[in-house]
Image 1 (cartoon, rainbow, N blue to C red):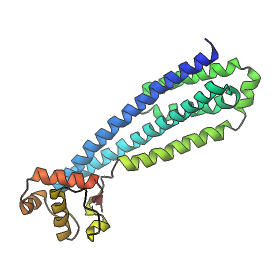
Image 2 (image 1 turned 60 degrees about the horizontal axis):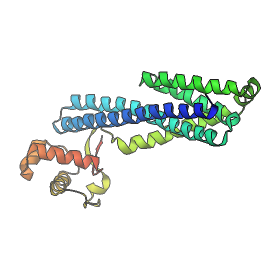
Image 3 (image 1 turned 90 degrees about the horizontal axis):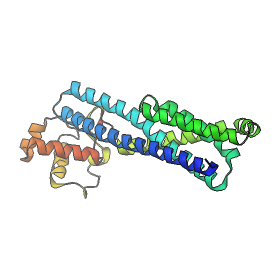
Length: 246
């Protein structure tokens, strides 16, 4: 197979694994939201044992999500680099860091999605075969270059970006309910709140800025159902109006 066709084939295989990681990340986010809502419900019901169990499950889900997201980002960087190789043919300088990133990503993801790890192992073998085609001298030259530092930088950047995405997508379900300081003193924005959410916030403020009450009592006070109050609280947490803290 011609060299450029082999690169194109490798890119195709990498895109499949990237898409699988993206799908896994979406499933983990959905599972986290489910556990997060259960944690909120348990907190409202003062079932702290179950709340802790759900919070711990969320923590484990987020560990997996970070691995998946950082691996997805690393593969995207690898694909961009391979596209450069495909276009400009600078295989001598580019293939070594690509192989190292794929190898490290395979190691990270093996405990989360073994089938993706196996595919990445096959992809790395394909990349290695490409280095053999450019000759032993060239292969040795690029392996001894600054590829390790470059690969390390790619992986570190991918992990840092994944950490940011986790913070954006996954609210932290830990501790007991409380208001953000801006809301507690009445300074937060309210334009995105529903009428019931605004009433729930006002009720929390009237209780000293903390949810030290049952959802049933709050529902009776606001002339709403417990289910409606629970949904309002879940929405307020997602919007950042109410936080879970000590």
